[in-house]
Amino acid sequence: MDEATWLATQRPSRLREVQAGQLAWTTVDLLDVESGHARPLRDALEGFGVQVNYLHIGQPRHFVAALDGSRPAAPYVILSCHGDEGRVLMEDLAPELAAYQPFNDTAGPDEVRSHVRLPGSVVIANGCETGAPALADAFLDAGARAYIAPHGAPFGYASVFAPLFLFYELTEQRTLEEAVARLRAHDDELGMWQLYQR
Image 1 (tube, helix red, strand yellow):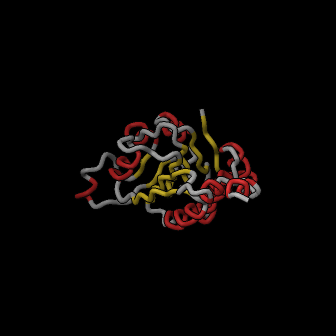
Image 2 (image 1 turned 90 degrees about the vertical axis):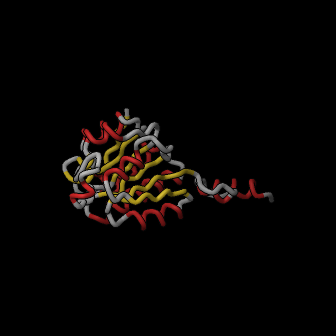
Image 3 (image 1 turned 60 degrees about the vertical axis):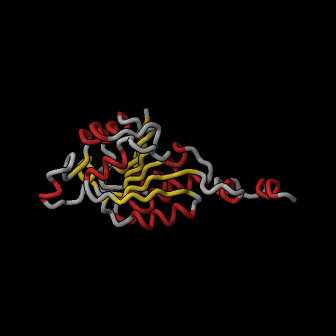
C-alpha cells in the first residue's frame, strides 16, 4: 500500500497533511502580551501541526510592529493577554520608555483602529472582557476576517484551553463557525467566547 492510500484510511484530520510531508497545515502569530500562557499554547499548537511565530510583546510599539501590516500576518493571530473592559492590558513601563510609545497602558478600539492592519486573519483573544463588541468591531475594521474572544472573565485555565479547543476542532477539519459552536457548547466558562464576523 502506498502512503497516500494509507493516509486516506486514517481518521480525517489536517495532521494528515503534516504526516504526508508538509511542515505545518497553517501558521499562527502568537502574541505573548504578559499573560504567562503563551509558551504552553505554543507547545500544544505545534503538536497540532501548526507553525507558531512566537512574538513577545514587551511594550506597545511591539504590539504595533506585530500587527500594523508591515509584515505579512499569519492566517491566525492569537492575543495571549489580560484584558479589562474591552481593552487589552499592556505592561506598565518606566516613564523613560512610556514617553516613546504610540500609546500606553491598554489597547482598545481606538488604538486598534489607529495601528492594526490584519487583512484576512482570524484573531483570537483570551483576555478577560476582550470580547466586547467595540473591540471586535475595531479588529474587523482593521481587516480581520473574524474575531473570537470572551465577553466575560473566564477563569485562567479556561483562557488557556479555549484556543487549544478551537485548534483541535480546526485540525479535525471543522469550519471556524463549527469550532466556535462546539467550544461554546462545552460549558459556561467556554460559552463566554463570542465569534464576530461581517
